[in-house]
Length: 427
Image 1 (spheres, rainbow, N blue to C red):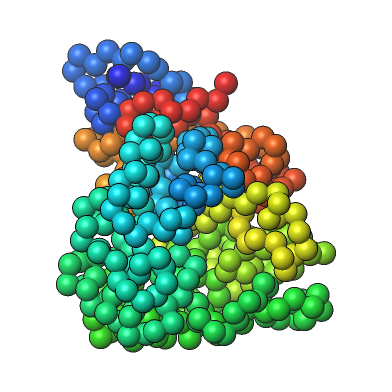
Image 2: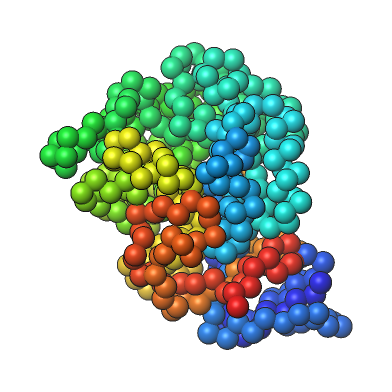
């Protein structure tokens, strides 16, 4: 199909473009920007007057809950949520049931995703068999099956020797290891940020040192092995300072932050609101301010939705007993735009969109997040001024829980194009 998206404000952070321009798509690729190619006759036209036309969003952490947790969400529901939120490329962690530690499981997931023909799904393979932190997986076979990296999800490795061997192997073959920095013992069983609020509420705490101790260990291993590591969902000011120093030293590390931590603090737990039960926990205002500053100066490379759908039976419980997680795919764009309002200058929107398009794509080594001629035609068209209220019942995701329920946010997706095909069009 040939598609013409006209009269929109085209923002392409990868190429530094921010101007009103038409976009021409043919054979699933970007055919041209600005002027139509010779003989171009569109089969379909989208009038994007007053809208922003940007690369489809790239999300570095979205749990699709298949296989094994279909009672929480299905591939169909979550991929529909993705395109409804303008997300065209997503990375899914390996903590499914069974764990993504065998090529057959990865191939099945990829096959199911392709058949749905919605967003592009890129799985992370398990770093160790069953995420048990003992035997390494067959990384080469998992890579051939379609894995773009290897992770432990939320399960820290107890034996540092195992992590050392994993990084040595990954370095040898050029693989990226994705780690969420958390000490295996400090803060174990904690449900909230260690601080005055958790003490008043009688909630067990997760101290910042659970993150910083893990970061010190990871950086020492990276210095020894030279392996490339992506740090998932940094949450604290102290952790950010360590990442900043590691980058200044030249260590091959990148990092992301969950979009919830960009706006909320532990105070948003309120009176035990289980929707605010997240992993890592919401931290202090100082930590939140440090996250915002680190996004501006480039210490944090990308914003992710940390999409973790949870069903009512596991969420509508006392705070300490509720399962952590929140839906985020449909909120990633709006919550990023909310942060963009705090930036100054004419390039604020371009800089904000870079954190959810070109920069996460570069971090994950994916050919996505750009509108260069010849690139895959993954596009989002959104109204930057449209205001809407977050209503769980209106979300496409099977997970209806988010700490932003009832909030009014700005920015609404009008159309999502994946591989040149209109995957979502708001009526």
